[in-house]
Image (tube, rainbow, N blue to C red; front, side):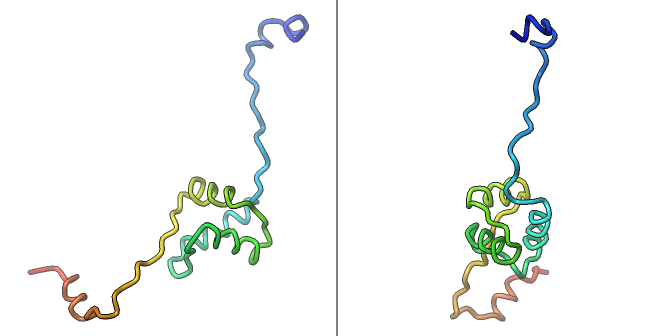
Length: 101
């Protein structure tokens, strides 16, 4: 039908999909990016990110959407400091970090 009405040029024309509407607004994404850059206030899991978005910003989003945004669009990895043994000697650990002369 389209060929008869518009010809070959209309059949060869590439149509661009508008894509889906994002569940997390741009302003919330920027707020999350700012929070992720702050090393003092990190997140232990993507579920914690999802909960923070809901409580602080009022944005309800599914886990997968939060993961996709955090991991791929913001290119952030959630990192948690590893626990240290309580028997470690702090002075000895600091002397180990100093460069040898």
